[in-house]
Image (tube, rainbow, N blue to C red):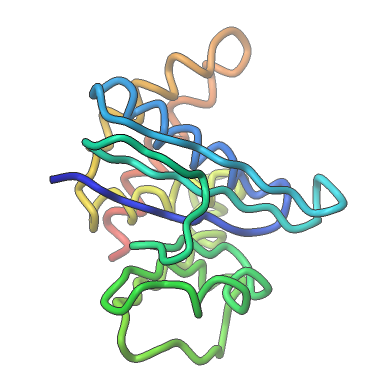
Length: 178
């Protein structure tokens, strides 16, 4: 039975909300129940941002996630805030380009992804979010890269369509980074 609760967190401008939306839209496409709940700090770009996504075969009753199954962390302040909430045995996806030399719990699964460096090597540091999302998809197997890419193709139309290929490459690079 599918029942995944994930918190995605980082600075504004890192694509945190897009990751959450893609997961939520992919759930909708598979006729699953889902809820995407954004939260912003006082600034948009550069301030803190996080979102909660619940994906379930049963009804989703609340946007609040007190004990997530997984957390995707794009910066150090987000790790400090959300790591204590992660359930025992949960999955921590860590952008190690920006989060270095930190203490992580020993009762969780930690996946370190040098996301910004990988994205820069692909030619656009802005796809670091897709690198981490690719790792998340590879571990959780909740959706395939292709299912998420299909949502991206629906969202990125017109001038943004040219970004689909680099996002595809970033998803794949995240999977291969594990």
